[in-house]
Image (tube, rainbow, N blue to C red):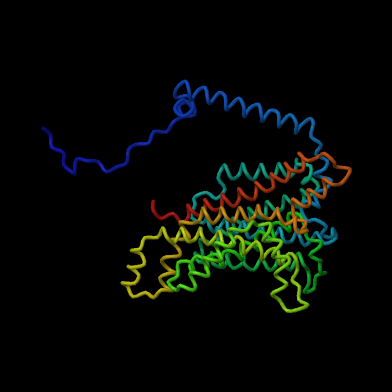
Length: 405
């Protein structure tokens, strides 16, 4: 009998055979008669639905409502003579996005792969061919070029200065205040009342503001719920459970009415600020549970090892526990951010003209009665784009932070 020794066992992983399209379809879609029948039925239903949608979009749909009201969808009643500020803000965002892309991809062999070039080409073609964006194509196409140029510059700078990433993060932080200055005016610019803020600009502003505020608050609540101090743990638990038991609509109304009650007489914060505070306080409770799940997933041995090395609690928490917990909780945290972005659609209930509210006001115009499908489909595409962008960014961050392979 031949003996088996450890040296005779191969430690190499099994060979993975690459399947072509036909072989993959046969294995996964047509492996037996039942799977084949399901595949045919599902493909038939999807094909029929896509055919009807495309046929309606090309023949029956009346898309004039979109280009005729494109400015309202994007900025609400923001003064048209001040649109240069919005374009300047878009240029800042595109420049920082390209710079971040280049810094993150400084170690890849090819920054502009074939798929990336195809994607950029499709974006440019969409800008030129899509009726609502066609009048602004001479401004939008340079924005795409700015992203590409900034990416190349960011890659070169990132290779020369590996620590540039923290400065890019600081630039993103400062860009928030630049955006607030460009939209609201002041400091040399003509002030614009928040009553004129609306559309996609207001949706993105409230969503970003809510995310920026809810993340540190949710982090503190998660740490407070796991605190060894009974009072801190009790207060954090009560806040989380109370907020999670109240619907967001009620929370928004409470924020509009009750926040001024806690301030001195005569001081009444702007209604957009009150809506942002309500969104942040509401989302922080859910975010706290996501972070707490990440904290519980960190092995107890990590804390014990840090204590054996003589590290104090703040250092252990900040350098060892929290980085691992946040890495684990990235999918849940980004999911909460996406939910917050979608929750901005409820701001129209409290009188704010965000993107969905603008759509409703346009549909109330007698000239566009019955154009529900066109308007809501257009809005759905916009919401999908930003939600998918956040999801894609979270996956890229997870790949970047993955140190297990």
